[in-house]
Image (tube, rainbow over all chains, first blue to last red; front, side, top):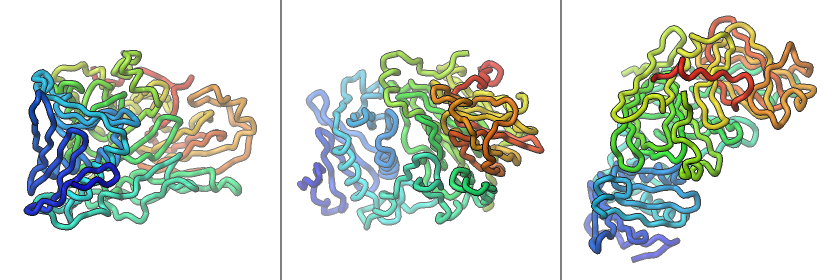
Length: 328
Length: 165
């Protein structure tokens, strides 16, 4: 057993080539097809399995998003809750049956500790040719015994925008990336900017749809404008959102192109509540008491709109704010 | 295979649906910006998204808008049409849009200040509406703008008219 930067890992398995990992009372292992997670409950060891590709896609988002806003359910059993500085890792805690049976388990970790373990799992379990950010048609297989790695894919530069991409000192535009195969018909022109002398750096615009058409990842929002604590975080979506996102605040979606279908369920129990179909131009809120998962057959452009006011989760928890944004 | 990306327009949009299982459709506050703009007056700032004080407004661009300014950055995304944004560096930004006042402030007439220039937007283009500057939209044909801003005195909320119920 090795311990590196608080990561506890076994030597590579002699048959599969994969390491196993321990994080607190949780144990993670994988084989050619499946990931197995084990935890203690009722004096026994409980276990759960996920397909390796689904697990790695979910884990990749959790790490890339810094555990995001609220709950990141890998499936209906395993997931994390972001407590901003700490993270709850849970098994069955938001699954009605497992919770009622008392076989659920939650353990809290400092964010750097769980991040280090999750990154180590990705580094070891993502094989050469598999990109957990990519749509299934655009990547190789996650399955099989260990063969190589794909560090470049899992350590992509995370874009941090202060005001708007392309401004001096701000995040870059994406002129160096290729137009995605499903966005070849998206116009690539830029807005014409006719600045008077002295105002060249104050007037700014860019082609947002071109920017999105060149995204090389799916289900991975990037900030493109900042109005105080209001962030526009557009993203391109294809296939299935790899996690069921449980909201700790109201989140809004603006469908910029094509169609996404959202499955919406109760945040705590997972009981289905609605299916929401959003077409181009549609705007909808995702209330603060639900979890949601999206399905996009054609690669689509989605504007995710977040309010990052720091105390919001506590205000919703206290009941100070209703879980839906508007009464009418 | 040639994929076709589907954007909406004032003349062609298909508002989506909510299939309820155990919920209230109103909680999703579901509208469509093209539907909203079709029913709006030119440059009526109709709120289509609201997250506490923060809003997204849908504007029908047609002709010249009034001049606006704000005490904070705002952002415009053209969803349809060809829309010019004209800018003036305000001589007295603090007086027109004081720091304690949020949202777009409507200015009577043309404000005094230096002309900063023009940005010509087409579908998908985004423009910064920077703090300290006044801006005016001009559109020869109908178009649609999304505005990222804060609820202000010119914001119009008419949820029951625009949302699924």
